[in-house]
Length: 194
Image (cartoon, rainbow, N blue to C red; front, side, top):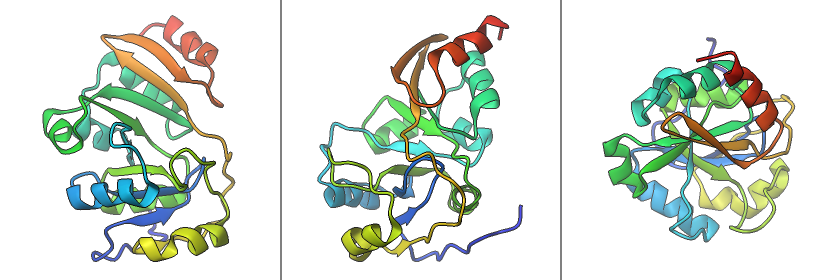
């Protein structure tokens, strides 16, 4: 994959476009930056951050994958779907949660960033409880001085809709938020067998 951007190793917290809304994120192992993201957003500590990954291999590094999860990932990712999976033990110790929400964004710039940075804990750019921000200039004005770098939009379309959120536990699925990928689409896939 040709690199669209170069990540500066000194950057800890960055803001970048995805296929849904802009995300603010840091490496999943950077505990200080994780705390800072919660402070920047005034986000309650009991609300976990999702993890954006570049591929199935990165997801496998941080979460336990069963056959159902692998099938859903292979058919719907990259895309606007977040899967809640059991976190690997070392990730649970960092985040304080037994589960982790994972997603592969369908955006070349975001994927390039994730290829270079590894899995990143990410959340939408906004004050906690407010509407997600999607305008680059507004984001720079409100958050530019709180992070290390804000990436400009790369011309790819975003849905401006949050992702579908699906929990998978012991092979059973539970839809927590329906977005562009519907429960019907997921059920149709699983009817074909794992």
